[in-house]
Image 1 (cartoon, protein in one colour):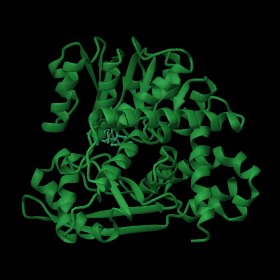
Image 2 (cartoon, rainbow, N blue to C red):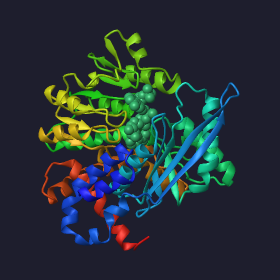
Image 3 (tube, rainbow, N blue to C red):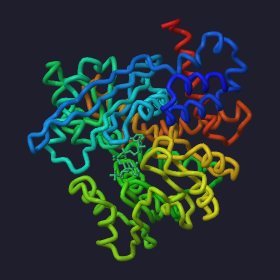
Length: 449
Ligand code: NDP
């Protein structure tokens, strides 16, 4: 597969996260390409790594001091073979084309795995909502949508949230879309419950990740009850991962944000987690404040120069990286193994570096890659689209049951594909192969477009 990886590197040398994502998928699907020469003849790899469309735009807005600010907006429409482009918007200062292309590329295979009719896309901005007033966030979101609205639609491209884009941002984005189009349609998912959102959507990625972990453990006749778990992040995915873990009788001992991490040996129970939700979602504070309130907790500030992340250096059974990409490097992965961790389930997208992945696989950990393990979020987004089209709302139990079924089926599909192509138990290969085959067969059916 080195030829296609070289093409990608030569064409866009600065996009290292995209190279990483392409390399992982192409290495996994090599046996499929070898057994199906018509995929190569049709230049499937070359077509997959080139987005169908990239939209890059200026986002001017005014801050509370009356100063004009200018950010950059993006939407990557990666692949529409299986349905309208679908994938989140990320607002974070680190956002650039390479990061969004990696996320859009992953999204194509993830959406395919869900079996719902969704293509893949991703977008966002280098705007940082942290420290901004609600009015500033609203002005930014409105300006962002003033350009994006002409490229999206319920049958074209349906964005959702991601890092830095939660219920508040989706509301402002939807408001401007509706005004410009004069249409109330399901053009975004993650909407408020009383205006078209789906029950369980906020919980879906975290709950889905835990359901996937439970499925992996079941293959060894184990459950999450009594397991000590490390969770990173303290945003949407981390909060609902922790919530479901606590509900299932596991003990969660860590959380983090970009400033540092907390370790609470006594366990983060429901009451403490409720405090974190208010701290993060209402007051928009820092995780350090957890240690100020609960004396059993130890806070360690983030050190960008350090060669490892202290969050991953505790005795535990399971790890749920739920913050951002490449947050577990080779040393962190070795620390996890040395500390007795038997399961790693990725709520975040590509949180483990290739060296880390190799260590997990070599040590036969139950390792659920993000593409499979965090697909619950986009699955319930797909269910939100269905409910919007049908103009009805399912109950919490109904959506949660569908989510459980989808995660079970993704687990089974990944396991079977891994087995079929000679790497039993390797969920990385299994998820990549199962997602890949469905997308490329649809591309072939649709001809050269
Ligand atoms: P949020 O913005 O709600 O939370 C992100 C969390 O990660 C925050 O605690 C944030 O800290 C931390 N974080 C972000 N960037 C960094 C960084 N560079 N270094 C350290 N910590 C960081 O986002 P989500 O919870 O929605 O997303 C988390 C991960 O899950 C992402 O990888 C996302 O792509 C993935 N994901 C999300 C889905 C969803 O439905 N929301 C669906 C599937 C995957 P701080 O507040 O300090 O920035």
